[in-house]
Structure formats: C-alpha cells, structure tokens
Length: 97
Image (cartoon, rainbow, N blue to C red; front, side):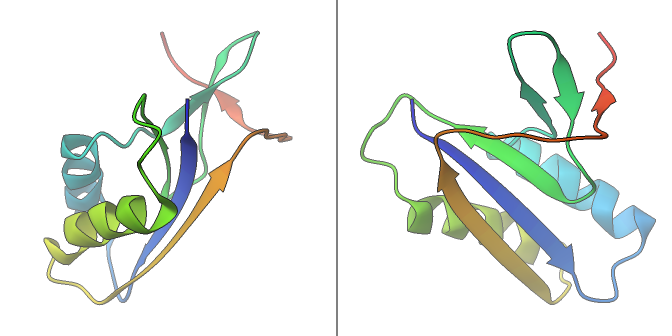
C-alpha cells in the first residue's frame, strides 16, 4: 500500500487558518496520525499521512491534492510530499482513542 507523508506550511497562517487547512486536508483523505504495531501517534503540526490502495498514485499527485487543499485557505503555502516505505520517530504523542 503506497504511503506518503506531506508537510504543509501556510505563509503568515494563524491557528484558525490551520484549523481550516486540517479540514480541507481531511476532506482529501489526509490524516494527522500514523500507526505502528503498538499504537496510533499524532504527527507534528502541519504533517499529514496519506495512504491508498491505488498503486498508480504518485508523489506528484498526492502533492497536488495537498496543494489544492492548502490553496483553499487563501494563504500562500509551501507543500512537501515524500513517498515512504518505513518510518521511525521519537517524542510523538499517543493519539486519543
């Protein structure tokens, strides 16, 4: 299953702008958590996980999906997307059930 991590920065964005972004990203299938064999964890601010069963989905298409969501905030933005096969972290907060 292809997995992608995306970071979105809203230029001069405030808390309300990011709340709006979270909704737009969620509408596109992005989530603010990541799961391992032990638990589900909250990702750092403005980071999103995106997974799909469609093997044809590309890093470019996921980035464009995120860019479309970010543009809906009417803020300038920077979007970075990477496809990954493994991950490791320290210091993440366990997500609420």
